[in-house]
Length: 211
Length: 211
DNA sequence: TGTACATCAGTGAACGCGCGTTCACTGATGTAC
DNA sequence: TGTACATCAGTGAACGCGCGTTCACTGATGTAC
Image (tube, helix red, strand yellow):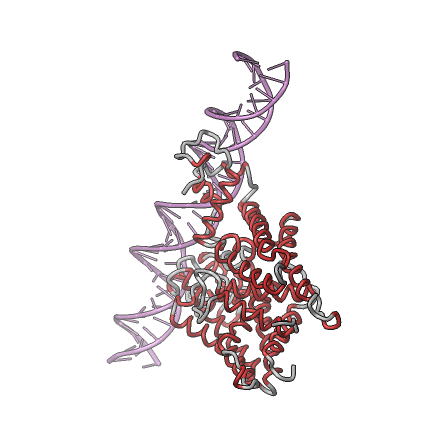
């Protein structure tokens, strides 16, 4: 399906109208199909129904396009994680579980975003904007970790940053090994259940009460 | 550095002598430099100092070469993990720590192998040999998990497979997010320490005694 | 030990292809008056 | 409301390049006798 202005019958005029957005959609579509390495600038132009020179009006090169995709990915990721966390309602632990599920759901439903963000080899400091977006997304996890740690007596509270990194590594590990269609290995349980059990055991190890 | 027969001054004759091995080394070198997507069949031939048609005598195509690289990667990985585990000596827990460190060391020292194995998008069932090698490597982790679980009273022993998958996902998560030179994010501690703490908390959650 | 021959591994030239990138251009849109 | 003009976004043709792949070939190696 091509993106065309107004969703009409492809009868766009000389001007596309929203080529930048269309190119980003094209990149997502193509990454989902063939992996982050499997798409070219020319491909994206073709997909958007435009001459191969047109993308240069909007992106310096393929990398800039990819990094824009990653940026939007982080923004959407943050949005979803924030929504799932919902300020820790009704209780931190329940919200935490939702957070994990949201993480995996994102990796599964938006594999192209996920690839661009974590596997395409785009350095986070490709742009300050990108880094900021990545930090904001991680910030949600960190905030959640803090809320959970608040349940512990102050004396044996590990650093929230560390706990957030642990949670993230578990989620990313599960997501990238088992969480997508083309997972390398068949599992005796769903990736969601596997992650939930893992986090549960970890939290018990931290001494979070009521688990 | 080119691979040449006998390590001499490049004065190989018409026959290379060991082109297959040289191509695999070339692939590793090139993957390490430019990522798994960043090398071509022609590149590998050039690196080995051979005409672009020569590789076809040894590999059907680029994918077959890559999958051979992955196979050797899994074999080396298994070798290292087995050595680190050392049959659980002197005690399962100490051996388990070594296993984690060996995992990260492999990802750091052999990033090209690691990429080919886990990130190049080669399906594990590209060949029965590859799957078997992957299974053997995972088998080491599983065996270690079993040894640890044996320390628990039989009544609350979770499935060893699940625990092995958890350990693997933590290791892979840390390795791929923070474990290599071009890590996305700077850490306040080493990847090794981060993983060790994570596994420790997890094992405490399992109730492994003495932790 | 020597010779003839089969097999093997690498050559080098050639091909078609798609990519990235550039360029002067042109059609469409918006704005000043 | 209409007209002139500036700006913008996409065109299409062109280029050089490196890749994958094929082919008949040839130099080197191993083996039978």
